[in-house]
Image (cartoon, rainbow, N blue to C red; front, side):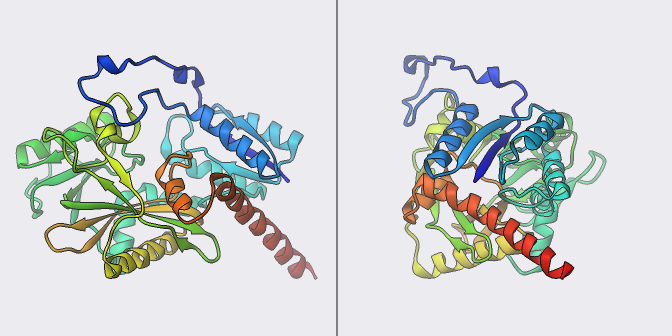
Length: 356
């Protein structure tokens, strides 16, 4: 079977290694401080799939759909391992790429367009989940500076761009404690991202990540926890953009993953049930991650976000949970490809049945 690992990096040269010396930092790093290089990760994924028995290769479409079309006509991959998360520097267009794959009848891994679009719209996701009695933090959406900022929410609040993912737009200043700082942060979101601001009550407590794996019969993998106990007092206990992606930032080294999380059986069962409900409700498939908080105040679980295409690097959260479930990196990638290929075979069988 031939597998194309497809991604979209317009300027891959920016990932050229930049040496950072530990002595230049004003804190002691816990993890490595080399720059993240997704290109290397994509190549490693293809090599892992080759070791799993597939004919795998990488393809960078570089904002040019013709590159993908020409490659598909030439190589005829059986499955596209879809890692395209934005197009023309616009995350919302990731749904368009999967839509093209759907129209062309090309088998691909991961979530379909509807699920991707739903999850990227944080407000829509919250409305859907709330309508089905799945608990999320209380919130308001702000679309302009003329409205009243007396929101009826309890401080502290967290302010996020309403249409971004991967912690984009979330830094230490995203937590606000009064109307003045709320206005400043909302204005920052408007000016920086040109989109509405989602304002939520900040849930102080334990942060949990529930990875869901599968298609027709998805399972919840061992739940991870993000340990903030070593976070310095000048930084908030959140997974900010810096904590997630910047190895030169202290927050990156003070958000420590623990897997499996030590949870009471009842809490774990509830988290697993909520994760599966979220996965199915928004239409995820193959793999996803549901982020939650276990409130310190009322000991209840709150769903923060549904991530339909979490990072699949070997040391990332989803793969960490898979490893603790007994799946190697190679096996996990192979199973994701197999889920997509089985859908292709099933669709072909259905077409034959209709014609007959």
